[in-house]
Length: 449
Length: 100
Image (cartoon, rainbow over all chains, first blue to last red; front, side, top):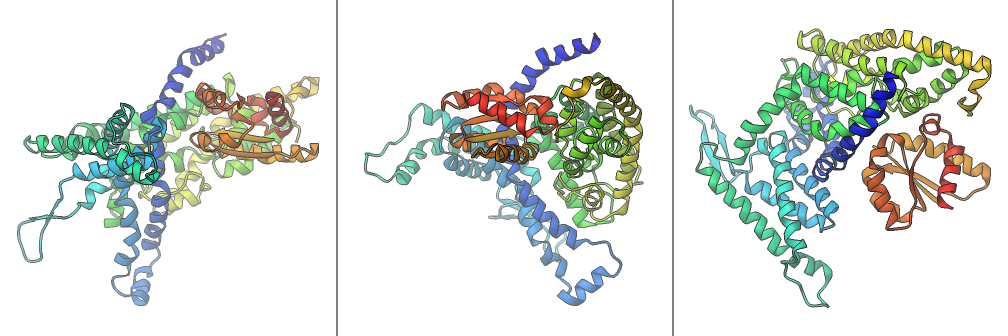
């Protein structure tokens, strides 16, 4: 059977690769480190939403109650969350990586933050009122490089500094204190030589780069890494390939999003923050990116990977077989919050040659439709508001576009499209289950609730 | 009897936890059952008597078995059918069998 060949190919070839990728220490540390920023981004987003509620007269009302500067003040927390994303990631990635090497994570995090700042030029360009040319101001930490623009530098330096740190610790080139010295004190002495080594290395790199045309690590990373990666990550083809890969992994029962997300999430997060900055500057203006973290969570994965909410609704309302009806009922609650393991493993969709077809192709088609709807300007692009992926349909589309109804409309359209694609496959499977149940062979697989 | 479950984010396994707790109550079994994300397992495994993985993170089995082996905690993957149908009774029995 062809399906058997595909399954054994996935089991023998893809599983080990997926496993290796998901277990790779640095990728894991990046993924776990970035998670540290998410609660902050979600809270920042709440303030962003309140700042730009699209109701006529809202601005005037708020100015009347709280004064002219209400929005600037309301958006303070947005600055304190989105604008320090890189700084938090710098700490988080180093902390998680050190944990995996079983060396003191707190010291690793602190050293990483210091090396991130050491790589950052403490100057900004500023145009004073009345002046015609921008002036260079020294002695300040540039906020732009602390946010998503500094994300990749933060990740690279976190890994570099933690690698140096743990190597030196593991080679035992440390100052050890005599017994009787409190552990906290001796720990800080242990970190002394490794921290010195890390900072000297980063310092030398910075001095060297200052003499090249790049001037700073930030510029090198921007030109050589972030630029090309963003082009790939923000393109339609890039999005289709990622979605295909995620769903083929899911089709054999592996958590595709967790595996692919380790690589793609820094890129999608950077694209998301570019939109956030543009949205904050002008909420009704043109936003730069369609493909962001929210693009997938809000418009492609209704009900979870595979856009299975439509399938679950079919099962609840149209199934004739007991099994489909039961699994549908069981899956509806979690499905509304975009959790769908019951339907993926319970139908099952996994390793099921019939249902894998709509499971893989529905999201790909939704990516294409949503991409064009947004880039042609029919539907608002995601505004960079970080809506949690568990937010139910329609709320999520409204919030993620910064309060635009078109976001909900596209979700409704996408839902109907998924219904149409799943319907014939669902019917066939349901029919098969009905005849199994009639023949009495389904007793083993029937759900007991 | 402490049973630890894990999946990618600890969300879908937490659905199963409820069902397993019901099954344990029916059996009159005193069990603590909880779910965490796969990355969080190392902070919880010391309190667990047995660790079960959701089938979607079964690529982590080798890594988890290593974690479990050093502490004498048996580790295995939940069957996809029991997982998909949230069959708390079967998974509970599977956990009890593993511990023996």
